[in-house]
Image 1 (spheres, helix red, strand yellow):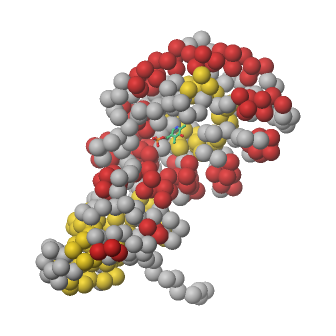
Image 2 (cartoon, helix red, strand yellow):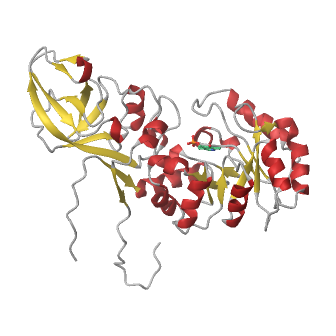
Image 3 (cartoon, protein in one colour):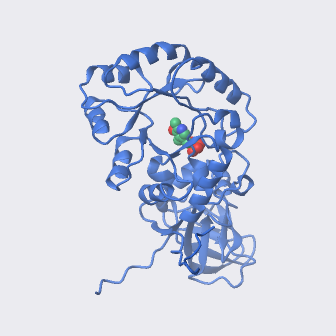
Length: 384
Ligand SMILES: *Cc1c(COP(=O)(O)O)cnc(C)c1O
């Protein structure tokens, strides 16, 4: 069989599924008494929904459910053959999506009176499982806490609802591991659902790592599965996590520039001396942040170099002083193993979540998994 030769990728994102499973094991270790709903919205935080969900659904730590933001994401999971419970974190907006949810066996968040009315006024073939979202202080989605009991009664009277109800809320200050608002939110939520039946869920990644009292029946980790710390000013290795995505490209030019030469659009950086400046093939058209400032670190041949000048659509320029051996074609790492995305995000004035989600279609994704294990034993004793 012959095919046209494939172009060698310019920029590539390597997705390490071993790291992903290791991070899931960290979730299990932190919250051993809780079920795990892996949050895989936004294409699994930019990592690729199907390979990530498949990897999370097998192995000893396998997740119990998935959480997605919208119907389209849920359908991708079903089309890939994943039969786990899937929760639509924003629920549905109309009867057509409600029927689609029933057809595909999806679970619904109900966070608004309109959704309650929709459930009561639509005829469904089978009842759905409902997670009631309560607002314990974030003031984004959710019913006021004091309505919990009445809501519960109303939903349980609705023939479209399959009991028991599940109860959830979302933490607004989970990026601060010392925030006093988090225990306040938790206490308010617990008081509101005290006498009500059904499982409870509060903890996102910040809750999993820093607030054991928030673990309850279900935890909902997102960012930590991808090997990123949810806390400002901390990096993944401090939490025992390993980055899942590494973003790579190569040098396409190494230019000997002179003292006084201005580099890139607007000439925002001027060479302080005669020096080599590298050009790497990645830019905001690939999802590398345009706001990454002068001095943002990258790895050239595994060693740190600093970004200079403005990020262009397809390229960035690098200060290669001290990288005398650097040549066209040499590898450049933008973030991942050896260079925390948390650090790059700080230089770009944003959070790692945004950088990971923004990696664009032009980047080639490759998935690295466990090598297939070959048995070397005699086959008489089970593996320990
Ligand atoms: C995105 C999301 C999460 C996961 O948050 P992380 O900070 O990524 O762990 C959990 N719960 C809900 C409702 C979410 O929308």
